[in-house]
Image (cartoon, rainbow, N blue to C red; front, side):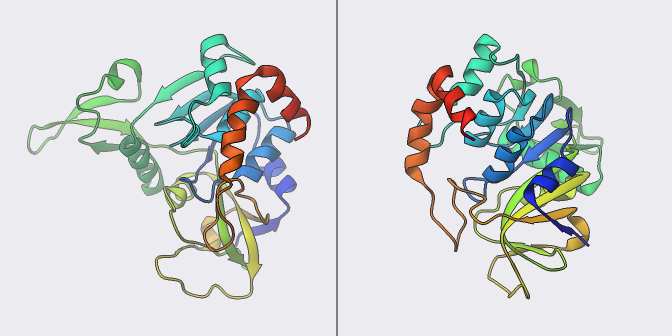
Length: 264
């Protein structure tokens, strides 16, 4: 059964220096509060894994938490670039950042392979791209039955996965709905997991299209109301579009970012 913990205790216990950490959430239910707690606790040398690194990873990278980024797309949705990510890649500030780039399909299949206990995934993706020339974790594989040349990518098994969800019950069963991305797969693939939730309820009432993660696959749950802001949590609050626009100017300059970081 998942343990109910505070956010600070969950990060302190589950996320260590040098870990491979996946904070997943696709436009929705992004675990922003957890990312901020990782920054406050000063974690270093993390390998950050995320299909779509956006503001939360820009902040983690700018704070010097990351040594490597494994991803398939990065940007400030609807606004533009991630300036802290660009500064790290182009100028090694605040430290050099190693990149490992995949496609969306490749990342999703890597999580599925990890969740399934398989060493790698096979797909028809990456054709027409030059990613294989730049990413060592992409390799051709020949089907033993048809002779078709496919692409293999290794399983993703993060040390810890962190996601946000709408609610959990006292036994640590977690319920989330809306655009859920690869949150389920990330938790099942990870060695440890922390789920932040809007609330704990006595009973998880059935909802159309909802996903339930049973408490025995989750390491810890922390109640963090508003833990996804400025992204949204369906049924609880809307996306704060102004925050995304404001972040462009805050993150564009090292001094303004450093001032923001000092107030976190």
